[in-house]
Image 1 (cartoon, rainbow, N blue to C red):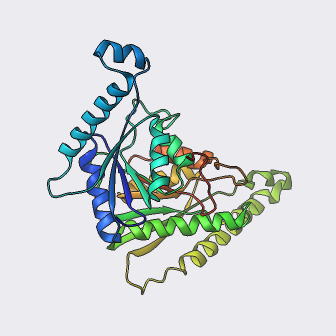
Image 2 (tube, rainbow, N blue to C red):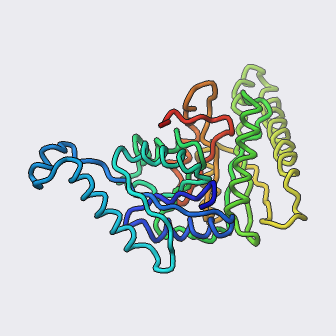
Image 3 (cartoon, helix red, strand yellow):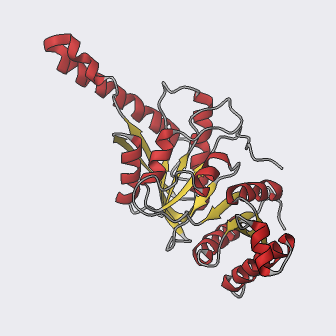
Length: 312
């Protein structure tokens, strides 16, 4: 087994899509593949065990064994990989396993939800996006294992706080996008910008409209230069996916999700961290809103300095 495998988190229903994506990435990157299933203990374990005529430990063994058999039955017949089933809180067990095996990537199906409001709120996915130390790829049913169109969301605001952390996250977003995208694919490098202070120019009276437009033009020009400078680090002449720059005006959670829909992206790659200096960096509101609006496959990355609060 290689040092940094792909960790595929599955249940029998989600196994086909998740395994297909994980297998393709393992093959392309020359990595191993491990499969993880997680089951939570019954709320009243002792009562459930007594009703089954078993000890609590025996009941857990029975449940984990049944899930392992179901997962193994759902795997392709030509795939011989280790399958582990753990019992506990799902996000904790996934992160602990990722830490223990030094996972390069965690791939799982998104949690099911009903309605349009806050699909990730307090879910396993939300915890993973906040706390998992390696990139997390949420692959919905029907997700394409061969990724040919990627939207990579970057923030190149030259006035942003913590520029070093931002630059690190942008680089890791691009690294993830180039890693998952097929060599003949394309990466849409998207930056959302706004002229937030444009409304302040009402105080200029008759010259306000002209000053307001000049301010917006200056912001747009600055962001375009910053995006061009970032993209210059990934020359088009090199082997690999084609990079297409997209400077889009509007709230990030709206325009990035819209960009992914417009180009029919197989995957949206983005950073999830807004603040540093804490053990367990907090997911930003913008990132959270984008994830809630995104309809398809999503990969979330964190800065290289991130330390998970979930440790053995």
